[in-house]
Image 1 (cartoon, rainbow, N blue to C red):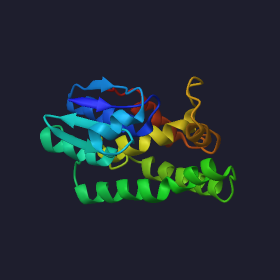
Image 2 (spheres, rainbow, N blue to C red):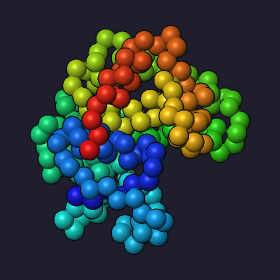
Image 3 (cartoon, rainbow, N blue to C red):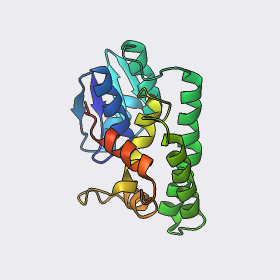
Image 4 (cartoon, helix red, strand yellow):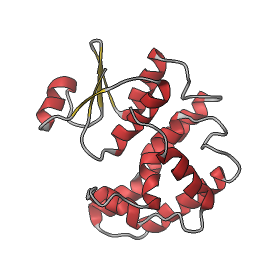
Length: 190
């Protein structure tokens, strides 16, 4: 199973976390240019998963594919629809604010929205180990690569979007969020 990736990709990290959880080994392919991605998948974004003639793009779609081919352990414990609604919200709503800051250079009102969202995560994680309870789920794999920047950034990672995530998020005063980030950061990657 090949995973086409680029360094520091948050969307790739979603897949590597889920694959490791499922015990799936990945062959990592870092193309020299995006033309390779276009040839393999018809588009130029990562991640791209290639498996036995099937090509899957978009990290949530790849997670669903991994669940289909290796259903145990599940990454959709309990109410799968609720987890998929969360993933859709995260991708369509949560990511608007940091993307807007990266595109415009203007932090307000977006930075305040990012702080409000972190407060929601703090409340959500206040009485549970993972976002949807005591079981690890696709929701954790989707959110973690973005929220982890609230606890800091590897200085070798100089991506503008990641600098925005670090500068406009903080775990200060959010102990449940900090603990979740530490738990997730300790998880293996495939």
